[in-house]
Image (cartoon, rainbow, N blue to C red; front, side, top):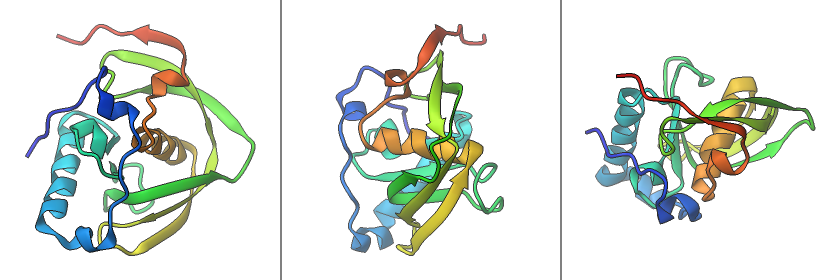
Length: 162
C-alpha cells in the first residue's frame, strides 16, 4: 500500500524517532510497514525513505537496491547508527520526498561505518562509501529529526514537472 508522505512543516520530521524492540520485528504490522515504505519509496521515485516520512515514529529506513550493497535486495536499516571513517567530505545535490521541489548542496562524509539491524533482527555492520554513504546519512538524519535543508547551501526551488 502506498503511504502518504509527511511533508514540511510537520513536527514528526523534527523529532528523534523511537528505537524498535527486536521482538517487534517479527510482527505482521512491522513487516507490512517495511513493505509499504518500500513500495512508497519506489512509487515516489525516492532512493531512500525513513519511517517518520510516512508519519511513523520508529527508527527504520529503507534504501533502494539500486544503491544497496546487495543489488538484489533493498536495504532495511533498523535502529541505525553510523560513524565517519574518514575526515573527507564532499558537497553534492540532495532533495527529499518530505521537502518536495527543493534541492540544495549538502556536505557529507565519503565513507562511514554503519551498525543496525536488518528486518529479521540480524546485526549489520558494514562500510558504506560514496552515494550509499550519502543516502544513509540523509535517512539517519531523518530518524534523528533533521532535514537536509538544515545543512544545505544554495537551496533552490524547482518547479514540478507537469
